[in-house]
Length: 443
Ligand code: SF4
Image 1 (cartoon, rainbow, N blue to C red):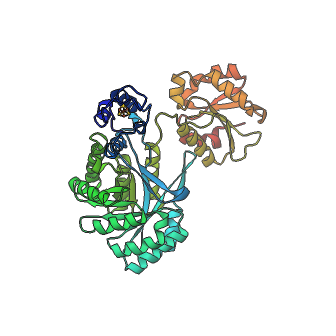
Image 2 (image 1 turned 135 degrees about the vertical axis):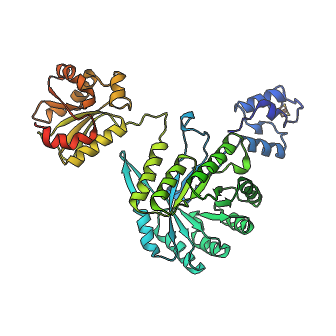
Image 3 (image 1 turned 90 degrees about the vertical axis):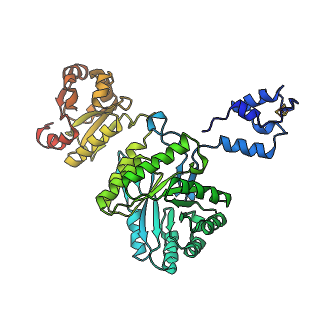
């Protein structure tokens, strides 16, 4: 956020020191406003111009833009840092899949809506559907109507035809789609249209200067919710451009480019397209529009996004407790791991792959993996024994065996003393679990 200093605020006050704000001087009042301890409105003499200037300088460096309405609406932008470790990224890159108005639109909508996957126990999915005009205006409007009726996803309307967009908005405006895209030739018509329907507008430009010029004009025409859509030919060019945009917005507080950015993938090869999308999910697209809709093309992008947009200030952990995979019986193995989410879900996934029902005790390690928690004394014979006893799992099985990760084989003796059970050393890597359970494990 732009720094709002006491001196900066003071310059905009009347400087009469009348005291009506309950502060002895305008300067004292300005310092309190800067510290956010009192509202500017407490001074009855602040001019409207000054209020506007102060509101603008207090606005975040990147606007937050919402596409869609209701619970499925997607927010983008509002980022405050260049690098995740400085604080966190606030809004994950939204992913839209592009469909054509001249194909089987209903089938394409179903295909896009089916793009949901589970990663580390959480659902990751495509959030938007982008409708591209390839036929005449009629088919575009009919397809927009179908999206309004059938798709639960917010939409991006992609067309260069202002009259087709105007008609499509008559059936879809309430769902607040993103209109793509205003350029040098059509920005006045599209700005008017988006201002009328109160929908966000993407702004397309060949250069940063062109983008800044267009956003300034469109804002003056009454559209505040803008998304920058630089024209990029490949991943490298896009990376350079998006990095410049993010730096200008956050470091230079350059208002005409203080908007979230989007990329419509340009790579023709399906693998290259996914790679381009991953590059831009890393830096710095708030919205990606992809053509590829095969699960193998989409899943890597969603996975990369899932990894990047975790909050570095919050441990990536699952609840430390006893988990059941399939329906374990009295001879089922009892495996131990940490409550680091990635470790836990890898173990759970491999146990499930083995088709051997099992218990997994996730030990509280504050979200640290096996070796880190061992090095930090969070995964010890004592903590494992405590977790296994607290889970009550040993009363649910007939055997007296616990399987520990091979990486902490050194804990075997200590744990046997603490737990009074046989400790079996499992594989070092989760990938070895299926073979271990099928060929080594004996109750
Ligand atoms: Fe200054 Fe306004 Fe306070 Fe009067 S009310 S002292 S003009 S800030």
